[in-house]
Image 1 (cartoon, rainbow, N blue to C red):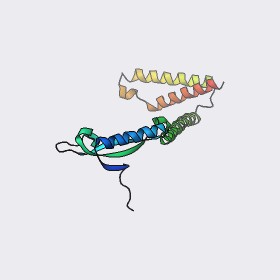
Image 2: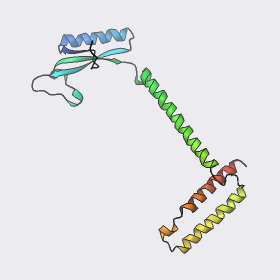
Image 3: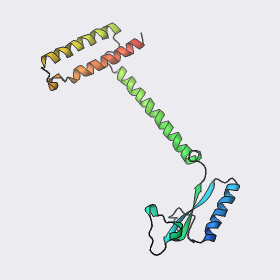
Length: 169
C-alpha cells in the first residue's frame, strides 16, 4: 500500500447539491451524537473559464468537484494538541523568568562590592561621581573624551551593591 500524501478524507466528489446535502446531513448527525468531529468541503476542479483563488480555493458555483476534510469542532483552546502547546509555552515562559532571575543573581554575586557596607558603597559612589564631574570639566564638552566605560560599569555595580545591601541590612 502506498504512503498517504494528502489530508483529505475523500477527493473528486462531484459537486452536486445532493452530495453537498449529504455532507451537511452527516455533520448534523455528528453534532447530535456529540462527536468532536465535523466534515468540511474544499471546492476543486475549476469549471472552464475559472481559476483557483488564493490558497487554492474556489467558490461552490465555480467548481466541478470537491474534497472532504475532517476537523475537530471543539474550541481551539480545548483541543489536546493546543492544550499541550499552551502548556509548553507556559513552561517556556517560566523557564525564561527563572533564567532572568538567575542572571540577576549572578550579576549580584559577581559584583566586587557586594560585601561592602552601605556607608562604604555610598562613599565610593560619591568619589566616582566626583571623578565623572572632574572629567566633564576637563574634557571641554568633547563627548568622546567624556565616555568612560570603566567608570560607568563601576558606578552601575556600586548602585546594584547598594540596592542589595539596603535590602539585606
